[in-house]
Length: 469
Image (cartoon, rainbow, N blue to C red; front, side, top):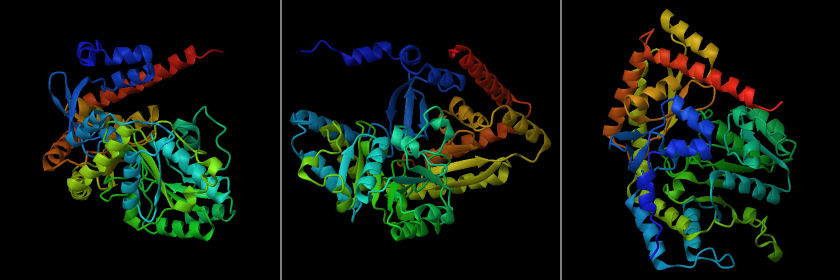
C-alpha cells in the first residue's frame, strides 16, 4: 500500500497557491493577479461554477479559454478516466497501434469528413506546428500566411504566425516564410498568394484576441483564391471548435471546406491535454511518404490512453446534451440582453460574437466627466479600462471574465456551453451594475483604475532596475 497521500497534501497546503507560484513558478503573473484582485483560492469546480474555500460560488464565464465547453468535472469524463485505469491497458507502447487512438481518430474524421486522416497530439500550439509541417511537406512551398490580429500559439512556429506584438517581443527573427495579410483584405491576400510560394493560409474562424471575424463574403472568396493558387487552407479551430460558436466547427458558419483543421482545448474535457490535426489523406501522406518516414512527425504523449478516452467522452457529452444547439440559443439570448444594455450605457460600442464566444467593446463616452476620466486612463495605459470592468465583476459579483486582448477596450466572455437563463440573468444584472458604477465619477472604479496605472508604472520601473546593463 502506497504511503503517498495526495489528498492529504492538497487539503493541507491548499491556500499556499500564490506563495508557491511566487517562489517557484511565474512571480510576475502572481503580482498581476494580486494587483487586479484575481488571487482567489478555488477549491472546487462543477459545471459552470467555481467554489472557494468558504463554499461561495463564482460563475465561470471564461471556461479556461474554452477548455470547459462541457462544464467543469463532468461525471462522464471522470468515469471514462476510471474505466481506462481499471482496465490496466498497455499505454504508449509506441511501436503499436492502440484501439483508443484509432477510435478517437475515427470519431473526429467522421465529424470532419471529407477530411479522413488524423494526427493526435497534446495542445493547440502543437497542432498548429504540425499543420505548418504538413502544409510545407505537401506543397513543397515555404510560406505560411496568417491574418493580422491572429493568435495561433506560443511555440516558435506558431508564434511566427501570431500577430500580437506583446507575445512576439524579444523572440525575433521568426520562421522564414511566415507573413501576415491585412484582416479581411482579399486584395492583399491575392497579392501574396500570386507568388505561388505560400504553402498555407491559416485562419481562426473567430479570432480569439478580440472576437473578430471578417465580412461574410471574405472567407468563401479567400478559399477560392487559395484553390486558384495551390495554397492549402488551414482552419485553426483550437478555440472555436466543439460548439463554441453555435456550430460544431466555426468554419461551418461560412460553409467552408478547409484542407486542414487544428483542434484542442474542449476536446480534452478539461482533464488530460488532447489535440488533433485532421486533414485530407494525400496531405497526411506528404510527410509519411515512405516506409522509412513512418515516424517523420511524431509526439511521445500524443496518443496516450487517458487523453484518447477524454476525447471520446467529450464528443459523446457534446452530442448527447445538445450543447452545440444550446450554445447557439444561449448566445443569441445573451447578446440580445447585452445589446439592450447598449441603449442604457453609452460606453458600450458594440456587442458581437458567434454562439457563446462574445465580445463587448467599449468606446469613449460623450458626457464630459466620463470623457475626461476615459482620456486620463487611456493616456496612462491603453489596456486598463476593460480591467476596470472584469475586476469588479469578480470582486463584487463573483463572475470570472477577462480582457480580450492587449491594448484593447474589449471584454471577452466564454461561458461553458451548459449555461441557462439563470446564468445569463446573473451576468447581465452584474454587468449592468458595474457599468452603472462607472458612471459615478469620481468614484471607486476610477480610483481603482488609477491604482492599476500606478502598479503598472511601478512594475516597469522595477523591471528596468533589475535588468543587467
